[in-house]
Amino acid sequence: MREESLLCHLKKRFVVTTTNSRHGLPVYPNRLAAVVLTAPDQAWVADLTYIRLRSAFVYQACILDAFSRRCVGWHLSRDMTTQLTLNALRMASAQRHPAPGLIHHSDRGVQYASYEYVHHLEQIEAQISMSSVSNPYENAKAESFFKTLKQEEVSLKEYESFADAEANLAVFIEEVYNLKRLHSSLGYLPPAEFEATYASPSRS
Image (cartoon, rainbow, N blue to C red; front, side):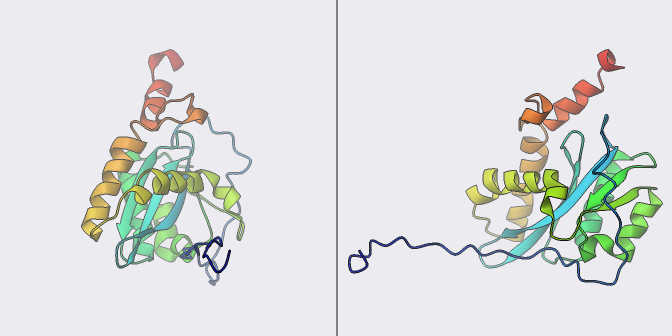
């Protein structure tokens, strides 16, 4: 089989590490684990991932409403810095205007533990919540979102440039995922429709 080149050739999976939790900044306990959500904007989950371009990697930060799974804030950047995550948070804050007491849940990465990021959370009077080290299951909704993003958008495209990636990701998030993507956990409704149904007079 070796002589005929019939052996299975395993493709090595290249993984870009996006979490650096080795820092001296304050970290916070997981406040989300014991909470039962009953409405939008009670809790947000935040995470970031890498997106492959033809000749480079760029980084995508997203914030989801933990109740409806709607992506309420996102940002794409060439650099994996605090500004990446902070811009996603600013977008979410501007669009949703959460009431004080919102739980903001993330991993313990330096981008989420940084002074600038924590300061913005304090300004909107959010409760800061973080996962345990190396435990992705404590932020499973964000992980699930990025899996969907990679399978249904990124892996089907070959982005020519940063601008190309940014435009395509915006369309997928805003017009496909939020408005059309069905979720079994939401009664087979997309996030935006689930929120609209929840806010209907029959539920008041």
